[in-house]
Image (cartoon, rainbow, N blue to C red):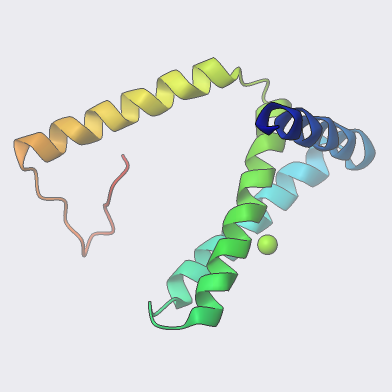
Length: 110
Ligand SMILES: [Mg+2]
């Protein structure tokens, strides 16, 4: 079932690119990232409506990431390898007890 959904989503992502084109979808991806960033910045952690907004924007960004993977011809294995590398680096920092400066905006990714 999951595989069927992924194939369906990829097919729709490709159709979206075919209809609106690379330039428009890169711009749309940028907009969706800004919308997620805005929702996160306005989230106080206690507003259920804002939680729903954050989830909505996470979905939007996820959909745009799928389109960006098609635009930039990203092999899912390449993405998985790079993701694992970032997690490994983060784990090493955590294991070293490196304190990341919260006020400087540095968090769980590098
Ligand atoms: Mg959005």
